[in-house]
Length: 569
View (cartoon, rainbow, N blue to C red):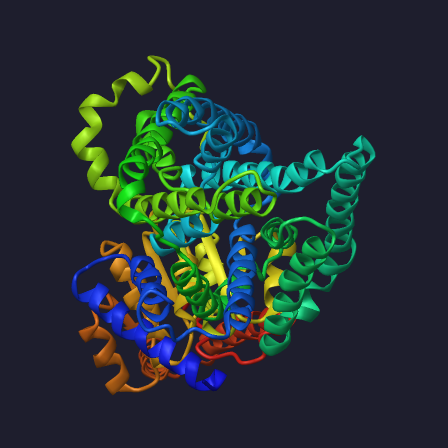
């Protein structure tokens, strides 16, 4: 079958299954995996170009981890690095030990029990990051901790994937291990230094062209991921580090928003391929063992992590939400068992068993994570044992502002002067990199981004927003701003600008609190001057001097278009 036809059929099936999932109010990830099962060898056997789908999946994984890294500033890593390391290593050790004894009790040999127990200890970074991103909770405390310990787990998995063949080979030497560690340190240092001394200084140049910014972001994220993979590391770790090195740039939200549609498409291919490659030989014979091991993952892993989080002083809700993250096994688990099969350590029936456990736990964990809030409210009375009496958890610095101003030229400059007098934290959003740079030099919180991009709007924290002002003249953009804010914070006051009466009425129908009509305000202001000053030339002279002074300030600030430039009467 021609590749284009094959991809078209797969996308068509994926769309139909996704529509069914939406109607049934089920997670779309489940639908993507089901698409793989339908299009794969089990049913229709439509997938012939597995290499192409694998490549598309790898691109999706790289972009997903790259955008996740954009949310991880060095400050966050320093704050949550310790808890991430302890929980990541601790959960792997506990699950491996408990899983080994359970597997041994089920009759597996020592080698089989080792592989199975280690496979149960790893959680899927890709699946979890997709679920958290769908919930729009990447900036929540539990998500930041989860990102850290999943990275630790991925590092352990990579070390095992590299170490098992080395230890199994007769030519094993500690020099190989030392070379691996040294190469990793040099790689991370190279990427960090390149970002600090080159990319960060080119921020304004990058922001001047949306097309170039988009292309650079893809080149940087996928390029660093390819570099890591080419030198024997995981592409996930390379992509994540590439994102972290750009997390301090003002354009980070714009990059994330631009890459989101591309990420979502390619990550669908990853889950479709994952579903198509699941093997279920002798399901009946392995089902009892699969259910027992799945219960360890779905129940045991969260309990282990919740205990570790409680010991470290975190509150029960954070411990509970973080614990649910590890209620599934990773794609690394399948790769690890497949490696054992290729080395002759395991029979293929073990791979089928772990694959079945993977399908059960991925389905179960998806629901646990997406409905974690409801589950917590139901189980909260029983979770007190996981919280110390003096529990006090560190919080990530919140980015929420009381006031957000969209657009800082022309009329926005007048609002900016007024906002400085308010006792409120305010943020300015603008699409001009020079404006952003100027505001940052003045110590004003500013964010570079396109207010007409819904993904960028959704990335802005409006949880503590009291007032939103848009001086963007485009009515469609103001419509997006209004809907984005209203859907998440209906109590916030929203003020927008309009240049036509029809647009103003449309905005009011959308629930905008007040619409500014500059030309009408200008005419009203001018008429009030005439009524108040009449024909007294001396009063006009005083007003004229103030107006000239005000206009000079505007020009000095780079805003040559004066309207509506209100001067106090």
